[in-house]
Length: 259
Image (cartoon, rainbow, N blue to C red; front, top):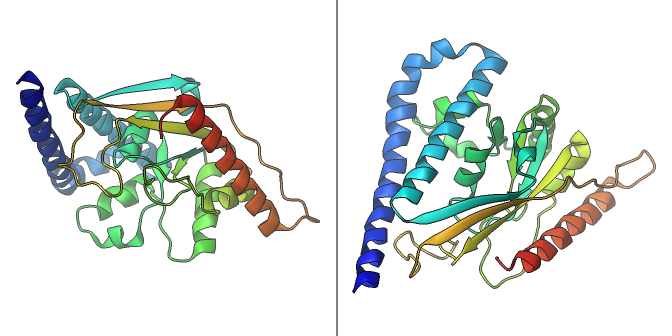
């Protein structure tokens, strides 16, 4: 009986959390942010302060879900590395909340967003204020990412491009390696675990697990990729680097027992 009550409590809490996520977006970014935006400074200062604001909002949101009993979360490994500037943070992507969790832990985080979001009247203002990256042309996208990293931003990328399907091996696209090589960036791997699995690519928000789930971040050591020289083949090095990153995450997921 208590287990069923707990299940329905978490189901209602999950629905409330999704509602609040949308409501906060409209209230904070659509209504309140334009009022205090002029006081955030200009250019670089404004970008950094807006990102810190987003970090704070997402941290409150994660803590809210933990308090009402939907989830637990933990950060392990070299967590202090998340506070450093200029990291290219690459992570696997098992859960819908991965980006929220990561941004809640990184003060100066940026990420890649779909160009279509710029046409959303509520999202246009914060995306531009935080300097989130969007571009239709792939080469221009890589260049923009490299510029952000060289300016000290921490860029979050999910090399899979979409959420992991449980039970299937991870498969990385080459974009993360291409950006890391062009920017000569500090590549920081973060292994995300979600146990039991929930909010995967094939699950609706109301298909919750039988018990509270735990999100975990394991922050590894920086990975150094083979640099591109004038005599090397860029596409070949990019493919090799992508396989190197894939192998790292396969090993980490096997070691931590969470996928």
